[in-house]
Length: 264
Image 1 (cartoon, helix red, strand yellow):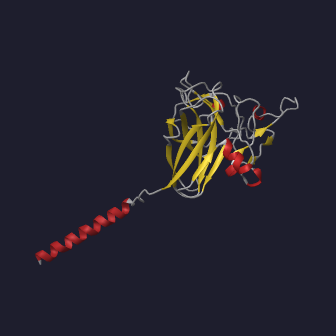
Image 2 (tube, one colour):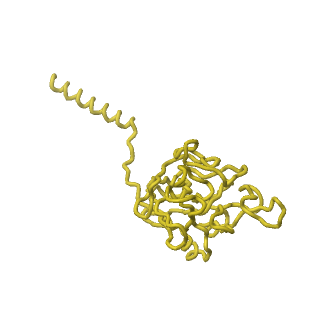
Image 3 (cartoon, one colour):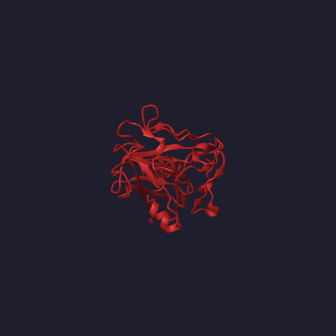
């Protein structure tokens, strides 16, 4: 599922969920909408071209993936959008969006945001890689995963920083959103080294992705491909403490009974 919003320049913020003409110049843009004004931008791959998973937030949003069965693999990329829906979605990021080489800080401006929802409990592994020939050679990425999705309907600005001293890597809602709880992150992910997390059935997760420490957020932009692989959750089901206590109690009673038999 992909947002069809298109920017006039690769360095501009993509993924706006609304467009508006608030300065009355006859041109609707994403920044003028502040994420909550004007008309909703259609998506491809969703029922009725609506926003995915009932999204109501004002933050920008680039893609979404519904994971059906453990063991399946998925791809997020411009080519995938073209092959599946006949639309060339703008799936790119800046080499320093997650963390700038000149920072250290990340920038909202070129960070891509996606949503993931699984139909059953499963392990999810994310592996991004640069699409060669589309721009800067981004060889290292950063990914942060949050539980939940943005529900803030207030004004949204695409300007601002994150992943720094004032907004640490483990911050909730680093973009001024509502409803995001930090889950995990890694600043060293690529096609070979992924970031894994346990996705619970029916829970929506927000994925914030960008280049990490290998360039500038605005000047070093390129397309990326995100491989999403899944695996069954084989973790043993925890036994409640009450069951252990009952079991130890039965063992005690059996031992007591044996002692009585010996002394009779």
